[in-house]
Amino acid sequence: MENKLDNRISSRIDLVYIALITMFFILLIVSSFMGLSQNPMNVFLIFILMLGTIIGYYAGITAAMIYSIIFIFLYASYSIFLNISRGIPVGNIVYFWMLIVPLLAVISAYNGSLIKNIQDQNRSLRKENAEFVMIDKETGLMNSHTFFNELQVFMKINERYNIEVYLMLVKMKYENEVIRILGESKYKRMVNMISKAINSMLREEDKKYILRDVNMFGIIILSNKNGGKQVKNRLKEIIKNIDSEDDFLINSVKLEVQVGLVCYNAEKISSPYEFYKMAERDLEFDV
Image (cartoon, rainbow, N blue to C red; front, side, top):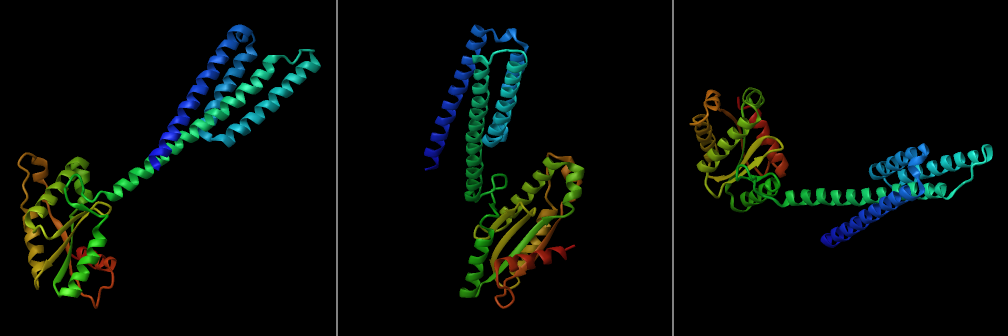
């Protein structure tokens, strides 16, 4: 349906451009045969014509119509004044300008609205496509779109099978200082190094996410009693010992993380968001 709509709009844009080219061609012919260049007023009217097409394109059909009404009123009044005061007849050229200026302004406005429509559709489609993408392309981890949904699933697993579910949040320490000292590109590289460490250390059945909107990693672990604490300590140690062989600047910064860890308890936690906020509070105390 959307593809058909896009094709219809594209066809209309093509027709509008053909109409604009045709009208400018007519203007060129009229300029040649009626000697428009001999009258300085016509040069001013061409400027008014171009101004109307620009206003119409950017401001819309309503603005183009208001502009046209004002132009017709002023130009007609000026022509009538010349006719009365100096006896200059209202010739065909006056009617030509009164027709061509509003027409081009409205056509240009219509063209602008069609293009804006396509741009809005493209933005909407990009947003919808982004919501369907589950994997972060830079790190290979799952992104935040599925995080809370899967957290809810693991909470149900705990309630049904009585398996301990841990939520771990991992955040780089002093990330603002790191960005300020090393720059955005090296900061992203360090984030990728942390993601590789997380991916390599944890099991495939553990769920690993990158939550870019809050600059954190989220990890859901199924484990036995106190297994989450062991994973936390081991992860911090591995990340602390990460070495970038080909980048002296990254190695000069001590890479450390804060880790928040919470074990799910159905009596204390009623929703995935509450589970997440508890892990976030635990992360803040991890100094």
